Amino acid sequence: MHTPHPAPLAIAAPVPLRGTVTVPGDKSISHRSLMLGSIAVGETRIQGLLEGEDVLATATAMRAMGATIERDADGLWRVNGVGVGGLLQPAGALEMGNSGTSTRLLIGLVASHPITATFTGDASLSARPMGRVIDPLSRMGADFTASPGGRLPLMVRGICPAVPITYELPVASAQVKSAVLLAGLNAPGITRVIERVPTRDHSERMLRGFGAELTVEDGVISIAGEAELTAQDIVVPGDPSSAAFWMVAASIVPGSDIVIRNVGLNPTRAGLVTALRLMGADITEQDARTVGGEPVADLRVRHAALTGIEVPPELAPSMIDEYPVLFVAATFAAGRTVARGAEELRVKESDRIAVMAAALTAAGAAITEHPDGLTIEGRGGDPLPGGVRIASSLDHRIAMSMGVASMRATRPIEIDDAAPIATSYPDFIATAAALGAEPTWLDR
Ligand code: S3P
Image 1: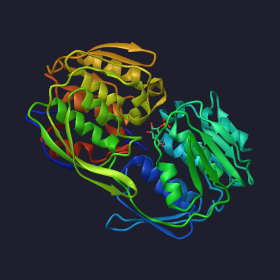
Image 2: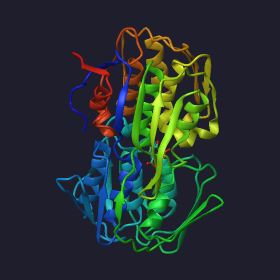
Image 3: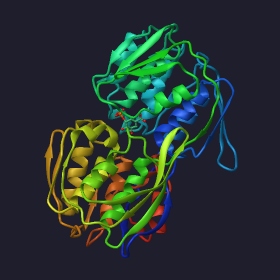
Image 4: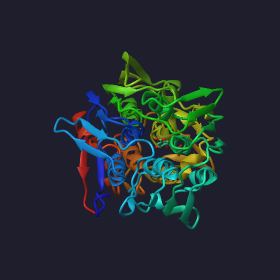
């Protein structure tokens, strides 16, 4: 799905970052709105959908299974669903590109329909573990033929009726939780997921919004199957995981003062704001409001002298996608930052612990790698020496995080391939320029 050739990039910040940015729609919520719209009865209308490659992969797959999905010229998306139980046999393989969320949630949906689907993906996605969804969904009766190690390409033969189960999550994963809940939607009876550590709850909120009978009590999420979902009008709030790059960029580039509009601040997603504030970041919330059932605010972020911290491990699930850019913030803080308890980072779009350790070390940072995180000796605000080309490893968040690091480097930090940024934030580079940074495309 990425452009066939790598696109090397560097971003300098010769002046303070100034201005107002609006971040694109939340990726997790965008996927879920297309999926639930596709199995609801009637027309779901979605405003603010993230039009990144990952979400478009979900749209293509839902169309292949019978939903009608159209985009109006003004950016409104219309989804006409097939009803729960109504997904059709796709004619060919479902190409998931780089998107783990599309893959794991759709495997869940297919598992309780009487259809067979094959999932394929790019090199990054094909290296990621699918056993975590194969295990519970096999217990519900679905049948899997996966590549060695429980990876893609993978074929799932769904079953109808599926067996409702009670499943305790062995890893803190919203994708696994959601896969089981989505399978449970078309299983007779109550499906339960036990979640000891809370993870993002967008599926639960949206399932309720579409009319599913779903309750949450003491970490037990119960969903009644053979549900009828009714089409909804959805407004997707801005993605805190995309806002994260500007929060850190403004914090580390001296003199910066920006406003980030429309940032989703669901407590299961807002851990980075807490961590940055512990480091001394200057972040104020303005105009707190509710958008599409989710808390949202505008954030004013000003440059601040950051201090290293022990990152509370209990924040991990609420900032799991933000660790790469938190590592960048820690690089410029005064003193040591220790971030442990985040071993899940090793099975994201890349091994984010190893890849960030390598990239920051190459750029001149002092890093110690642990099995479950990093220790970073901060530079007290001094720029990184830079003068290197680092590997983004097919990982959008590595590319953007190192793009932020390159804004505070004496010589450029070149990102070998910025193409993966299009999976989640197609406007990232234009937004950097709008804030006063200078992105430069480089020769391969
Ligand atoms: C997501 C859940 C998280 C996160 C991913 C999106 C979701 O993954 O890292 O970017 O939308 O449910 P895990 O479920 O693997 O923690």
